[in-house]
Length: 531
Image 1 (cartoon, one colour):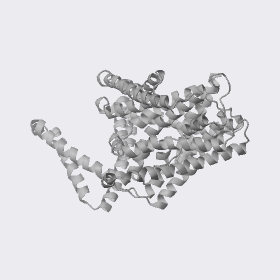
Image 2 (cartoon, rainbow, N blue to C red):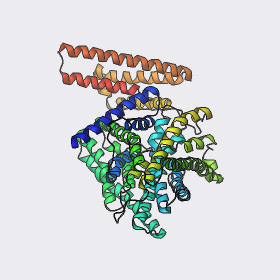
Image 3 (cartoon, one colour):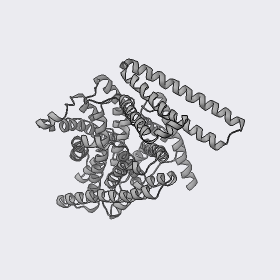
Image 4 (cartoon, rainbow, N blue to C red):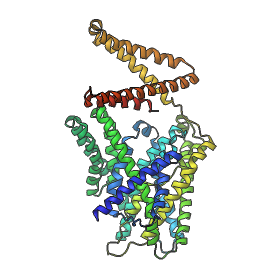
C-alpha cells in the first residue's frame, strides 16, 4: 500500500514537471496548465481516486508556502503601501465573506449563515502565486505587483480566521460576537509573538552556531513548521506566526547567510516552493471528479449553477471593492497630495487578478468529515465542489484573460521608478568607486610592491570607466550594447565550459578542482540571466 501511494505521488510529480515544461513552451501560466492537466489526468482509465486527509492539508502545504512568500516580500514596499494592502487584505476578505454568506443562503436550500461564512472564508483570498505567475513577462506597474503580493500575506490570515470561527460555530452551534472579536485579537497578537520569539531563537542559532549551509538550509525548512505547530498547539494563529517570523528572518538574513548558504538556500526554497505549489494546483484538477461523485442531494446541474453564480459574485464583488478601497481614502487631501492617482485602469487589473488557489483549496480540504456528534458534516461536498469551480473559473478564465486586459488597457507605470538595469549600473558604479578608495587606504603598500595586487585596482578602474561610458550613452544604444555584451559574455562562458570539459578528458587535473571551476562558470552565467 505504501509503495503504491509513493509510486502515485512520484508519478504525479513527474507529470507536474512535464506539464510545467509544456506551459513554458506554450507560454501559458503554469498554475492554469497544471489545473487543466490534473483534470485531464483524472479521466485516464485506471487512475485511482485521490483522497487527502483533511487534518494534514494545512500542516504540509501552508507553512512553507507562507514562509517563502514572507521571505521574499519587500518590507519597504509593504510598509509604503500598507494602507492599501491592509484594506485589500482584511477589508476585501471580510466583505467578500459577508457577501458570499448572505448570497449563498438565499440561493442554496438548507444552507445556513454559518455555512455561508465558512464558504466565504474559503474562497475570499486571492492567490499571489497564480497572479505573479500569470503576470510574469508582462509589464505591470510596480505598485500593483506590490499590492497583490502584500495582500496575499494579510488575506491568508484574515480568511483562515473567518474559516476558523465559522467552523467552530458549526461544530459547537454557538457564536458570540464579543467573544469572537476578543478571540480574534488574542490569537492574532499571540500568533505574531510566537512567530517572532521562535524567529529570534533561530536567528541566534543561525548566526552564532550554524556556520555551514548543510545546517542553515535545513533549519530554514524546519522554521515555518516549528512556528506554525507551536502557535496552533496553543490555539493561536499559526499563519501569522509563520508570516511574522518569516519577515523577521528575511530582514536579518544578511547576518547569518554567506554567499554559499544564500545560493543553496535560495535554490532549495525555489524547488520546495515550486513542488508544493505545483502539487496543490494539480490536485485541484485531480480532486474535482472525486468531489462530483460525492455530491448528495444535489444534481450536477444544480451544483454547477450555484458555483457559477458564486464565482460571478466573487469576481464582481472584488472589482467593486478594489475601486472603493482605492478611491474612498483619496477623499483625504493628504493622501491625494502624498500619492499619485492610480487612475481607473490599475484598480481594474488588481481586481481582475483575484485568482483563487492554494489557500482556498487547503481550507476546503481541511473541512472535517464529521461533526462533533459523529454526524456527517452538512453540505461538505457541495462546499468543496463550489470551491473547486471558483478556483477553476478564476484561475483559468481570469488567468488567461489578465494579460489580454493588460495589453488592451495599456496600463502604464504610475509612480516614478528607476528601471532595474539602471539601478544595478548605479550600484555597481558606487561600489566600484568605494572599492578603489578602500584599496588605496588599506593596501597602498602592497599595490606598490606587487604587480598582481596592483592589477586589482586597475581592473576596478576599467570597470568604472566602462560603466560611466555606458551610462553616458543614449538609452537606445545602451539597450543594444547591453544585449550584445550579454551575448558575448554568455558565448565566452559556454566556450570556457567546453574547454573545461576537454581538460577533464585529459585526466591531468583533479576532479575537485574542475568542479570548483565549473561552479564559478555557473555563477558567472547565472549573473547574466538576472533581469
